[in-house]
Image (cartoon, rainbow over all chains, first blue to last red; front, top):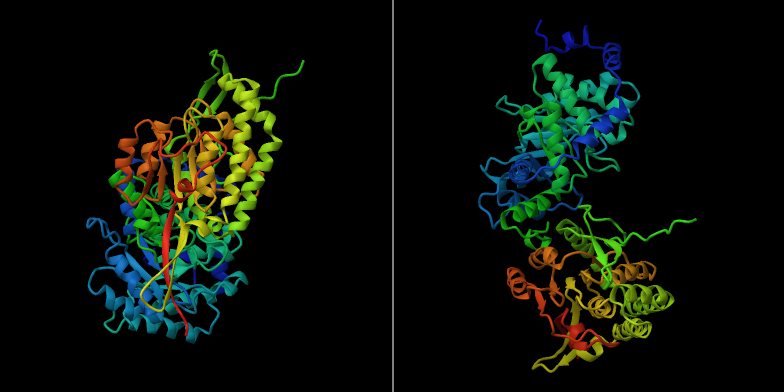
Amino acid sequence: MPKNEPVAIVGGKITNLSLRRWLHSLPGVDKVGLESRAASLGTRSIKTASKAWALDAAIKMMDLTTLEGMDTPDRVRSLCLKALTPDPTDPDCPRPAAICVYGDMVSVAKQTLGNSGIYVAAVATAFPSGRASVAVKLQDTKDAVKAGADEIDMVIDRGAFLSGNYMEVYKQIQAVKNACTRADGTKAHLKVILETGELQTYDNIRRASYLAMLAGGDFIKTSTGKVTVNATLPITLLMLQAVRDWYDQTGVLIGVKPAGGIRTAKDAIKYLVVVKEVAGERWLTPDLFRFGASSLLNDVLMQRQKLKTGNYSGPDYVTVD
Amino acid sequence: MRLDVKKTYKLFIGGKFPRSESGHTYELTNPKGEFVANVVLASRKDARDAVVAARAAQPGWEGATAYNRGQILYRIAEMLEGRREQFVAEIRELTGASEKQANSEVDAAIDSWVWHAGWSDKVDSVAGSMNPVAGPFFNISTNQPTGVVAAFAPQKSSLVGLVNTIAPIIVTGNSVVVVASESLPLSAITLTEVLATSDLPGGVVNVLTGKEEDLAPWLASHQDVNAVDLEGTSNPVDLEMRAAETLKRVVRPGTFQRAGSKGSLQQILAFMEVKTVWHPKGH
């Protein structure tokens, strides 16, 4: 039996009991150690050529996001145009990895982006709360995939997770993964949003990460951006440890996406330092690490302009979305 | 025996009193060459932080009613009056001025705040206009604050030059990052303690101390600064060229008198933009 089969990893038939035994046998998280490690990595000073590299990398790893009730087709279109030409004064400026929108905006985004190579990610499964029947969640996913979404960002059922019903969460992720299958048999990439701000403890976040990886998520993502606590450096560090250990154990590469609350280039660079130090350089690619952000791009662009011209830039010199 | 508790002279950014990001300081001496205090040597990062704070504070300050801004400026004068002795002592210590000279400088500074406070709700009545146009429109020109101003206080003045630099900028709703005189910065720092207790929103006035030549190029070229007042700078031509890289108002050194107890309306208007609106006349 291959070592990356769920049954081999859990050590027996997948039931709620076996999942529970497996998840609760994971080592507990040292809260103080985790937070101080994240804080110490955050103090690294990244300058000049390294900074220029990091800023470009941050743009390439960005999922430029608009997830508002007030999103209009024009708003999504203008965001797509911004992704196509982030900095009109600099043709060498790289493009973000993807545009992240609600499912009903996928066709608009797809149309605007054309074959530019920028992916369209859609949030699905009754985002952000995840409170809907499984049938509705699956249909939500299928609609987005059918409209052309390259990536699906699903939310886990936090209620089921917190009440210890791990099997339900596992089954839902698997079902959504199946729903990501396109007509031609290929699959949209699946990012599993753990909504770490609602999971209460670091131990829970570690368990949710493992559960999502076991169920077949291609990425584990911190947050929806719709609750008070979103991505933080310690949480991202914890999830990066999980994907690193998962790769050592199974040989499967899983990506990590912190989302929400990352607004400045300085913050983004801290995350990149953590990626390199915890997971390794292998993860410093848009295939395995993404930022979910909306206002981050402007700050990174201003920092790029500062490096290029030597003058401090201002918001008058980037587009306001 | 009791040790003196010496004051730490710090920066004033966003309503807070941080030490420099760089941790650098410089020594101040009196005319006899004796040590007076260690003062923060602000770095370009401090200047950048100050611009961010000033930008954040500006819309709220502009949005306050002119009457409210006038009240706050008047309140600054009141608070300054209450700390007169400290200002007199610091001016005398650094410049060697007589008590009478120092007192008259503080008087002028207080009077200047009051003079400027009065202008807050009158600028538009005097400088705005109703323009005749060939059509059924009211055509009205009003003056709006330009935004964030970087200013360099005169090097040879302790207090009154600084007040006559800040007051005309903030009275109309601009925010300011001001670099104090390098050799006479004590009054500037003590003034920030007055500002912090005068209901002035944090970030409207930000005070940096240090070398003007270290900070000026960064502020003059900063794309998020709308105007520069180059009064206390040593190399204004170079700075004006840097400022010309972006759309920025420039006030050259010597343009305005900064010694007295009054400013000038021209100086207030130097940091304003004219906005003209066409409003249809109903018939």
